[in-house]
Image (cartoon, rainbow, N blue to C red):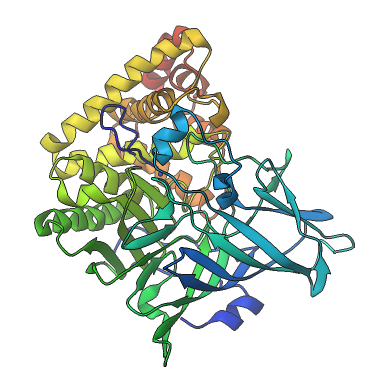
Length: 512
């Protein structure tokens, strides 16, 4: 994810429904001619099926949701992220203002009629503002799938963030109830924080039926180009049936008829850039080219993009950009600005399709992992595309890395959990600046081909799964044939007295 300020640089992170529901999709979706051999997709362990209706006048989404999964416990938890914006939520302070702006209206999601394998269950909210739903699964077998159903009503809040609206569009990020992860440490019930991207999710299959009023269109994490679309009369509504397989979330933007679509191809991948009538056509085309070229570059360098579609969508707000599987939200004013910030935001959010999207990680406890790799990939792409235009961005990140060394005296590191960052400035300088500069220094020492060879291996080994910082350190230890811990301690742990061992580690690498 990104934020608006260049100074702080918080910029940069078809109807197969019933078949999908009964048997999760296990085939391959490829982009012929782009990148290397695709990684086989394992069956997703969770399947979501939703039937939703959009009221664009009231900014309300209503519907039903069914989730099929194998129980890990005698209960399950679902994140209800929209309830972070309840009227009772305390969203005061500069950090919330940085992400949400000053002008806000509350919102939230209400759950009713919860059922477990057809049997009624109590609606049991948890969390300070009901941001969790606990569902009992007593007596359910860990060897058989269970189905949890619920109805919901979402009042979309108004702010500058991931879940909001303006006069022409409504963007839905982290809006559907989503199954919480249970890992070795137990259930991960992390709250919605004012800093970073406080999300941690596994791969799942999604099938959505979306009902829109006349005059509206949509872009989603699904594949709109092959969606089944039904027009109804006399209501003059459109019904979309959409699928997304092996993705970590399902995001959506509903747009009115002021929106236009520019479409291109990267191999077999359809790339759509959504903009509005009146936007600067030269800038729109430029951003569209950045989206296509960065998608092709990352496919070649880090592994094939395995989905059939990628949407870059203009939204309101002042967050720079926000990544979701197969779709990214881009701040509206970038479609009328010719400075390099737009290039960086689009390239950054596109790189997140690999680091967060394909290779998942704990964004709460190890935010540096996806953000640093994403920002390094952004710098590498921008430099090879236009070295002169990229210099400002690269210099900014390197200077932030040097500034970040001051945090060592305060006991802060790039490996901090989200709640340990006191403000967006420290988060940005440590996670983006220090983390990105670490990979840049490694590229300078090893060469880009050597570094990208290791990163391709990392992606291939962890694609469709979760990766940890420890595993990333291990893969670089293997590549260098000597312990990489001093290098990561110096850069991420801000152990400045490890500068010499870190440099020695770089010199020990044998290129073959």
